[in-house]
Image (cartoon, rainbow, N blue to C red; front, side, top):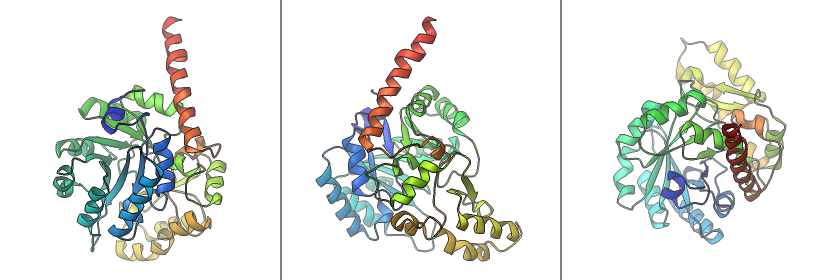
Length: 328
């Protein structure tokens, strides 16, 4: 299947594994790329730019296919050394960067000089248009269904994707609620050139997370996620557990008039321990990001098995079901 995204990134299938904190390591990234998709290393999971350089080199040893790096620009009093992370990306021969968080315009010249293609994660049409204006090559349009940070507009992909198609000239991929062949075909119908999957790739054999996490995703339904940190306008979609219930209780009792810094200090221990969940399998240790797509996860395949099945069934849906409707 050829789309503007497969052509731009020189990949076989229009499927991207989005950057995920404490998940986007070389094992998963190489498996996705070897299966014909685009794997993405998460830069800020690596403690230093030097560690990122080592992870990129490790991934090159596992695949000769294209892969990218996610670089998230986080509002902070003390920013990570982004210039140095970008240097590691460039020196590692990476030609695709998925940016997220704040506007990446400040760092665009450094990446563009190295002929890097930039796909920026956006949760609204207006942010997508801004990304297009500043020179991003593509955008990942994240609907309200997505795990992690869905923005503050609460627009699901059934509206967001066709609106993006109406406005954008650059290619975009659908993100949020993407899991299977129906996801891909619907994304293409909405005007996207592919799809980005995050939560679905956690439940694969190669994902470097604890088996407890993978099994929990198989058991979860689309009703098992919650939105936290809404009062801080830093909304995050997470899987329900004891820590999440505590966060919701604290936010509820705090109200909208209290000191946001005080609220942040109260909930920080409950949102800062996701590494223990993913690495150690302690499902109650902290809140951890999960999309509503959990309701569509029923197994734990290899990345190749997952991607092959998606592509085979997508072609069947298009050539048999949809064409059959036209000829009926």
